[in-house]
Image (tube, rainbow, N blue to C red; front, top):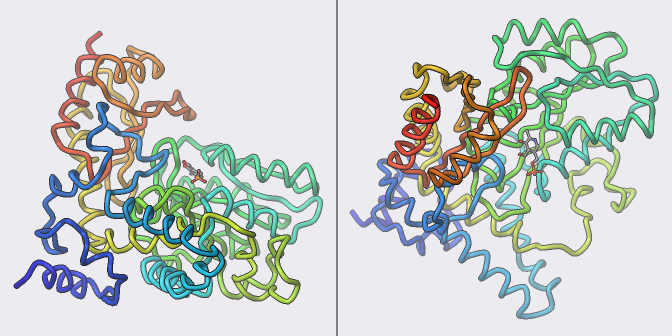
Length: 414
Ligand SMILES: Cc1ncc(COP(=O)(O)O)c(C=O)c1O
């Protein structure tokens, strides 16, 4: 069987649509197919693999593999080859098929989705679009993302909504999280804001249970799912949230400046239009598309990232991310002075895990990892002392993680 056919077979096993854009036939990964993946071959497809540093900060922003990057460059060339709006017109079919493929991946209807620039933009559209009055209460958590908090605080300043913050030490058991939110929700609570995967510990919050709790008390649910798409299995129907925001440039390795807005079908008409939308567009996600002239190539380039993802196989990728996290955490969790801030079981975390050392500050650890061991990570502030966030990706090798483990052991002895 040819490699090309193996690709397709792998994909159809996973139940994915196979009328992909022609990009897949151009992928220079002839032996790669969805049943078994050579991860070293995958690594070679990422320009980041030539960086002199070991890149363990995919949580901040993803990077594109070469086929996606090359495709994006082709799209940019195309949009500059004639009147750009003509090209945008020609791209409408790909735009629609991107939404259908993302809907299939996240289990919702494509009419509930819109591609936007990032999680921040999607959250702004939701938070500024909700019909709220002064005195309405919003419940969120101290672990939520600072810029999402800013958006709510700006809304509070403008309209007098009241923000109440749940103060939990994360990670925590689902029951503890539910009890803390339950205590905070009153009959004035109109919205519960939940971060699906926290940016500091990488903890997966019990969104489905929190949604059920919020709904039982008459509140709507906004989810900041920046880290969810292509990092963990995401089922929007099952989560039953009302609004969901994500970034495609993180774990899907899509072009920078691509994100996803989801609004549950029955909620679309009541969410305010984007300010520049036609007044008759209220009951249609299309109202979030009237954003003026922009970098359309990025949005259309999502097709290539989806092709790449499908070629690897969705579950293969998720399993690999778990394998990498388990590989390094398993070797340091019992080392003296090491504190893991993340629960490693797949139900509690995706690719990201965070640690700290009792004997050295996070700032010093980050600096030393960078300078002495050539490792790029992010240091994060958490309740209870913060830590070093390690986010490997499918281009990360176990040898690179060995270097991290070696460095952590050395630093823990200082
Ligand atoms: C939980 C969370 N929300 C929102 C964001 C913002 O994502 P973006 O910069 O893609 O808008 C991030 C970024 O890391 C995040 O971790």
